[in-house]
Length: 202
Image (cartoon, rainbow, N blue to C red):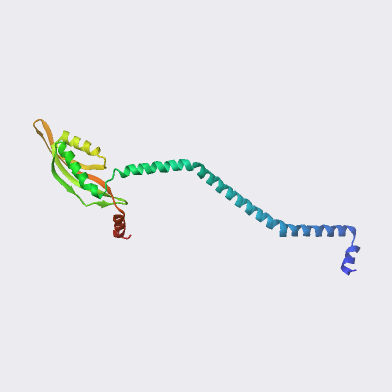
């Protein structure tokens, strides 16, 4: 028999018990260190992954449940865009629109002293089309002209309105009005590309 084993057998009972307990503690510690701790870390990671996946499922379920509402909102925005498109003329319609503005002014009883289209100002997908206007006539005619312009199917903004030469003629208050009429038109794809190329680099 191995001398070391014989020594163990010859030890007092208390020491044998103590030695056995020590061996059990070492085995338990080795089990925890080499087997339990790695599994515990893996379990924590799996719990974290599970929580993340459950969160993704919840979010995607919410999106799926809201899909009909989002589709309805998308369709409504498309209808509003289509309506807005009808209010912005293209380049071919600008001359007739400007002719319509002068016709409205003359119908309202105004005399056009100046009607000068200015340089267009390109924006993202449309361009401002400003026109300097100077007219003369009665206050009533001016008011009718502005009202008629506001009722045009196309967007026309009247800004920078200035009244001058106010006088009474045959019991009618006559005036000269200077203003800026601005309409808008869509830029075609080629114009948008050209504008981007011409834009200075910052």
